[in-house]
Every structure is written in C-alpha cells, then in structure tokens.
Amino acid sequence: MSIIDRAQTLAEESFVTASGPGGQNVNKVATAVQLRVNIYALGLPPRIFHRLQDLAGSRLNQAGEIVIDARNHRTQDANRREARERLADLLEASLREPKVRKKSRVNRIGKVKRLKAKKAHGEKKALRGRPEL
Image 1: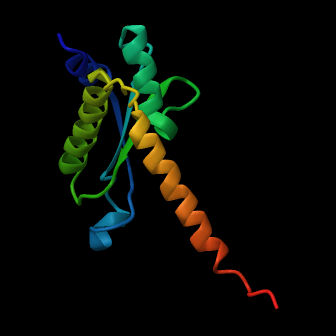
Image 2: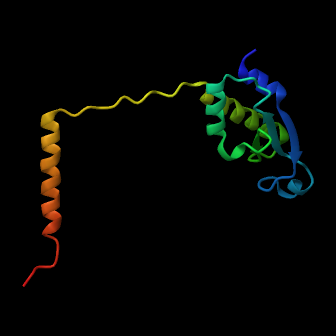
C-alpha cells in the first residue's frame, strides 16, 4: 500500500457550511470539506516526514494533523474530491527528492570581467550626483 493510499484511508472528513457559490442553498447544506490526516500515523521515513512538515506549512496544526479545507465547489462530492487531490499532491511533492544545488565556479577571466563591470557601474552612479561647484 502506497503512502498516498494509506493517507487516504486514515483521512477523517468533516463537512461544514461554506461561503461562496450555492445561492440560498449555501446556508442550509454543509458542502465544505475539512480533511484531517495525522502525519505521525503515516509511518513515514524521517527525510520524507520532515519534507512533508515543511511543505504543509500552516496547514499542519499542533496535534500533527494536516488540515485541508476545500470549499470551492457547490457539492460535497466535488469538494471531497478536491481535498483528496490536494492531499495526494502534497504527499507526492514530499516524496520527490529535491535537486542538490551544485556550486558554480567562475574562472579567472570571468572574475576580472565581473569586477570591471562593477567598477564601471560604480563610476556611472558616481557621475549621477550633484555637480560640485
């Protein structure tokens, strides 16, 4: 069972009344979905766990639950689908290993050119000042 499938089964949904599209129906029917998944229960390896914590940001509460709020659609089913897709996207992003940045190295000629350009730019800016009498 993949991590995404495990998260989908552990997710708890609750429905609340939402603002937005729906007309008068919006006051009567709870269409917004609040999806909660406890990240400790997923049993993730430490590297993926920490990446998920970083990616979740403010969606992660003190209890270790990721809370995803979906209220863009008029129906419960569409909001439920959107919340589950967002959870899957978040988990997929945490599974991807970030690319390691390789330090670039400038050769001697490149350094000289950069310093000459900086010097010329500084002189140009110095000429912009008020002229001395």
